[in-house]
Length: 420
Ligand SMILES: [Zn+2]
Image 1 (cartoon, rainbow, N blue to C red):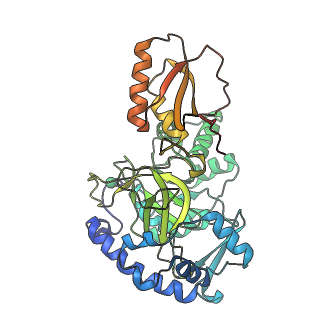
Image 2: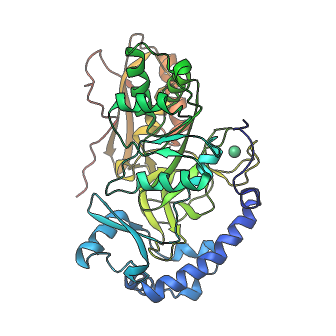
Image 3: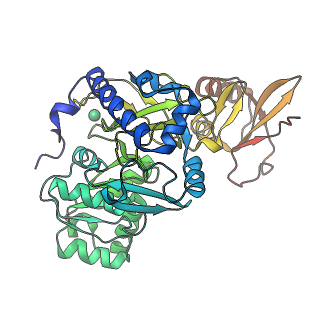
């Protein structure tokens, strides 16, 4: 079976990115007009920004509206229960209501899906694959999202949820399951339990494809699961409120943006859209009529890269999850994230511990990276400083620390600046 080529929706996925954006702009006009007419909270949002629906003619015009973070949705719903003035259809046109921690109520319209079908197809799932869906089915939408998507792909499934590992093993074998949906870390646990039972997951199971989301997928975790099961593991990016936003194809190297939503990367402070390759907050506008989210701030950090992918899909790629906005520190006018510092330092296995310290002297930010290494020579120091400048885009000074003086508490950046 060919699991590596083809498209679920060839017309759409192979359209040039400009054509896809034109299509999105037309749909945006419709959804904005509907939302302002029917959702009081969206009407207030437009009024406060001094914008009328007719002003939003292109995707660029969206930047005239502010970013609404998830915390604001929770507030709106608390002030004006249950939907905070965000529901844009009568309640009898709502198919399901999900309740996520916050609390936040996410309504789903009858004819509105979550768009994971495209992602599963790109991951290699094909009609007839018997699957287990290990995402939870209660309250939060993950279980239902994938249940719907597998159903419309024509994949029979067992709604296992995050059940007992031994029961998952029994089901995998009894039904000859070929597809797994859930977290990669959980699949690894299932495989390890199977090995303890004397099984060889690559031989005793028929697993071919696994789709994972909701947690970062480090290369090492992907490699372990793929080797253990002899299966392909691909990931997607989305949220409980938005559904699928991006997904990997067979070629990997980032996640293609799904055409079903408008994804912007925005400056976490100002909401201004950023350019290709720049790291910022993932901001989403959905085309949903029931629950129209417009410039919804996910709080997740990423970047979008534009390059031609071998698979033939034309959408640019989301670089994956790069951390949360609330972990950002602004240093010398540039956002610094723990993950970026870790990425920079990973190139130096000689460095056993490190910590980035932000201080302020003479009204200027100073970034110092304290590092422990067995051999603390100037050549190494210079190489680290060069790499930090390259990856962080700001200068940092490296200072050697005596062995055991940097606490191993998982902190990467410490901000000592005082603002009064
Ligand atoms: Zn691709």
